[in-house]
Length: 281
Length: 253
Image 1 (cartoon, rainbow over the protein chains, first blue to last red):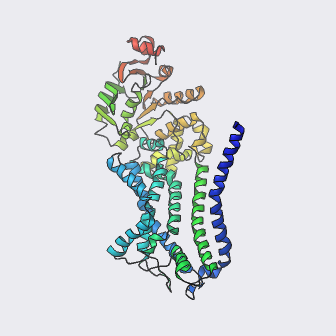
Image 2: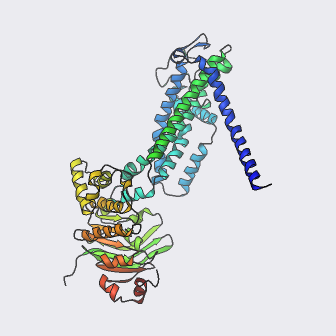
Image 3: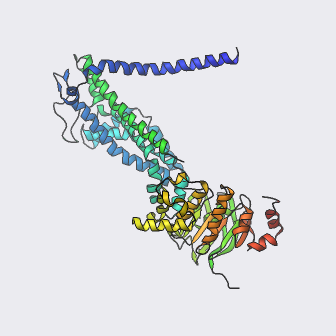
């Protein structure tokens, strides 16, 4: 077999593999959009469910997911960013700091249901928050902490060392240097990582299952200690637990959830590409 | 001859990075308002010495030292605040290191860190230091544009101006023209020569003729040791040591 034929065969096989990977994604997206788009209406997005969730809107689930994501970020972003700053800029390279870094990397691989159990044990039971928005938010926050810490660490590590040295050599203190010469350049990377973490938090079912998600609530939550409905769990409920919910509503709910996550990811992509264009070192 | 006043008094300085000894038992004085140039091949301890003077070596975890460095009679490791020391002893690096911000913000960076916020005051400082660094005319109309768009030589003079803006007493140069073309080099050298009137200058260079052109006194370092230190003229006409002569005539290095 000559080189040209080898080339053809290799590129064909690689192309087929790529198609095989992309195709299911496209099909899933396509099916959800086609079957769900009919359900999307202003009423669907802004009204309470009716008739045992087989009609009406999904407002409480949308709002619930937004509350949970917001709560998770309020908790995880400052904590994660500050941890990463400490690890990259202050911690000395020793056994303990290596152990911490290893632990954080491994936390990212822990199944989400384990976080759910952890949240149930700590927040719901031990701290007696009960099944509530605050317990769910904290659980989701802990789940995305490793994502935020890892993204922030990478963003900080890609800031050239020379920026730090220059700043210090002009008599700036260490914190001034981090504040003015490191964080500004790492910010887009931190943001991207955070948004990707949020996308994950928005879509997860297991962590909220035990900590916050309600099967059905007739009214919107009024405090952080209330339970709430949430999109991923609502989808599970109307798909498997409640008989007689039309396919249109189920796919419509899936579409809303998907759109929410995609919008978050799209936002991350835009931030990152703008950052690449501006970067000049 | 009047005895010149001493700026830096280095007493038996030894520097290690891990197990490697970079400077061995170095004793020398740097005088006020001179251009003290240091020549020597790679790994001769020139840069380690320079970084000792404003404690930039402290940033390297494996760094250890023994001995004393006095500036104006006070030990730089114990009797100065490190931030204040670095403000007084500025450094220009081998490669131009503008920060990715505007020309003005580069100059204002240091003063801002030291608490100056008033914009017209910062503008005054910018004009003064850019003029002193010999670059004002070239950039005065584009202070708000990115410093990354300047040429290498302009960036290097911007870095000089950035140091002048924090009002130092000493300026360290670490092979400041190694990445520059001959014309830019000449401009940077001119700026250095003019700065002598106000500042004490320590110039590390891998370019022997640069030391001959701008240095008042020249030290020759080899393998972390001071081989010879004398008036620049004398070093280049009648060196006291065979090794110095070999190096400046290009027999090694």
